[in-house]
Length: 312
Image (cartoon, rainbow, N blue to C red):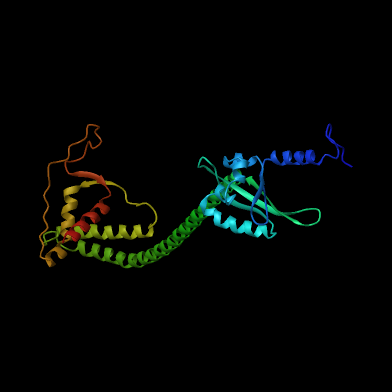
């Protein structure tokens, strides 16, 4: 049994009605009572906090509560309220509320039918609550999920890139094995050529024309041998050592080696040399001749020969 409220007559119906109205007016949510035909019968004071309009203004408003929401939501909410007048029940239907000052906020409305003690319909009650914070958290969650999806996509792309790199390295490894095999096969006949040439050279008189070219041939055989050795070391740094040699002589050798191609193409290859390179103040190049350098001679000759061939 409930205890009677102090200083209030027990059987005073108007005063009890005022108490329930006061309770409804002081709720945080925006409460409305509408008839089955959609006519607004009562609105609590919370409507002013949501919309800037007083309950009295709402009661005099045509098509309440449609003017209190943004235009894009009015048609949808009007259909819902028509169903509410026929006795339907819904929860948390979201729409954007329009304040008198032009600002907007997201809210959710729920409604249920109302009846008297005899079961006769009294219309329906609609309750609107603020969901701005919920919408903000939902948007943050959406952005977070998008960020996670982006990270997953980036990671998947990175994995695919690494897989492509792995396949490329496998192909290069296979190519290296093939190059090593080819080098091995070339090295055997090359050793025979070197030995045979050494025998011929010992029996050729020094006064024979172009005898000076024999040293050139011998040097090129050694260079071929060095290239074959590099093929063995395909994925390692060059094993050639730097040495001191004449740059002018290296250019002359490259031109001589290019003679067969230049003659066939009817192209004359000539070289001109500028002033000697000055020795730096640090003395780094001290002791070198005017055209001497310290480089990997075989590799430089190959570069010069490639340049001449490309030019031809």
